[in-house]
Amino acid sequence: MSSLKNKISNFFKKTKHSLDFFLFFKTSGRVDQVDIDKKLVYSLSPRKIPTTKQFKYLNKFLSPKENLILKICLLVFLVNLVYLGVVFFQNNFKNIPVRGGTYIEATVGYPRLINPLYAISRDVDNDLSRLIYSSLFSYDSFGVLQNDLVESFSVQAEGKEYQFIIKDGVKWHDNKSLTSDDIIFTFNLIQEEEYNSPLRSELAGIKIEKIDERTIKFILPEPYAPFLDLLTFGIMPQHIWQGISAETITLSDYNLKPIGSGPYKFKTLLKSKSGDLKEYQLVANSNYYKDVFIENLIIRFFTNNIEAIDSFNNNQVDGLSALPFANRNDLLKRDSVNIYNLTKPQIVGLFFNLDKDNLKEVEIRTALAKAIDKDDLVKQVYDDTYQVADGPILKNSFAYNKEIENINNYSAVEAKEKLANQNLKIKLTAININGNSKVAEKIKTYWESVGVEVEIDMISLEQAAEIIKKRDFDVILYGQLVGGDPDVYAFWHSSQVGPQGLNISGYKNEEVDKLLSEARKATTEVERIEKYASFQNIIVSDVPVIFLYSPSYTYVQNKKIKGFVGNAIVSPADRFGQITNWYIKTKKIKAR
Image (cartoon, rainbow, N blue to C red; front, side, top):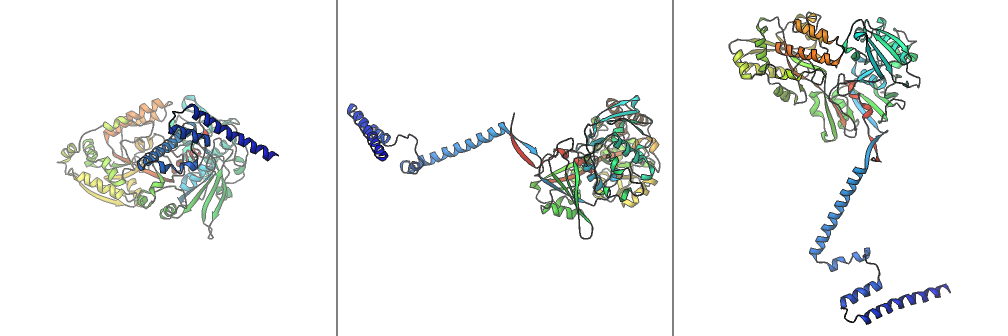
């Protein structure tokens, strides 16, 4: 019965279509054949948009030219559609880092004491200590001191007292609370002679007091502006270390399996069959006061740079802790890596022995300085990876005085005229490390071009200490590690002249002594900047040294690691100064 109804219904529908067409044709006798064909087609298929099957017959109705034009139009349409889609997503969605992924870094050497009391003595120990322990302050990867555990601080008593409030809710990796007692405990361990910490001499004479669970006070014997720079050591948990004596502290398992409060915590370590450490595994600290995105961090140990670089070239690791300049050509696949040349806190220069009669005149030293093309030197020897230096303070320091770059600004031609009749003979001493032999040869070329007779004396690192101590040189190619703070008192104050001092040129200037003493006692940054600006003007004019360049620390990462920023470090561990910004995994979210 149902089937019969359907047939009758279909019959009437078809009859209606035919009748409509007949009536249309009857009343429009003058309609041309094209219109009739259209109506006939529409009567059979009411769809006005062709189906997929119908598109297959398009080539039969279009000429080759029309077909080509249609394809081009379709291609343009698709390209624009993709472009508009990309623009839409870029404007309406953004990638954000999320926790996940593993970063593996190759380093040369093995850890021994991942302990804030001793870690500063070895780079590998210091790297791991930086990741595991928090400190009151730390340097970022721009060479700038930043708060770590410290939430806020104040300076009182004309620069003799510093009061600190630490962040609330900081936890150790074993989930116990970090308090001011842990800071006092660590500070006292450093100061106790029997523990023999290399940090002890810097903190001698300073006292510490507890105000409350989150507040401490340091009391200095006299004002010392760079004091915050001394507070970058890791803080140790009192509940872990308080029962360990000075005699056994270096034997504790906690030196290799530490508990800290830093962004990463110890997971496990792997050893070879012979007992050598192969790798050290860390995992993100979920209780850290900042988000940590890279979930797993593995440090893999190698005996030399060639092994480490080969491992990177073979995609077995994602980063190189350091790429020595001499090995830069061993690095393959440069298109897939990021190479960061981070300025080190070192200034290399040609230090004059001011006791030598032929070098006492400032005009002679100035002419020798102007005979050297420092830009050419850095380009030819170090392929522009090092930074030209113009004074005793780093260019990235807040106290750097840019005006010194124009002091004694005259040409090499004038230098040649000044030295033409001097019959000057100079023995140039250089330590045979880090490409110094090439630098010495370049200096010799510059000086000989202005009429100076130069003898190069290459010495070993072991010989250097004795030669410097006895001041047995005319000019020595030497690098000063100046640190993160602009305080260079130890290098240029007249009290530091002598066998035990670091003022190796024997430079003495009463005004410089006064400026350096006042700058390290200043209570404001503005005052320090003013003092150091005057100091730099004087020393660059007096030319006790020809400042040449600051070396770079080359750090390498696979491009899959995102978020690294920076251009300077105080220690190699500072490459991790902003590790909480690094990431591998991302997700898209709708932009606001």
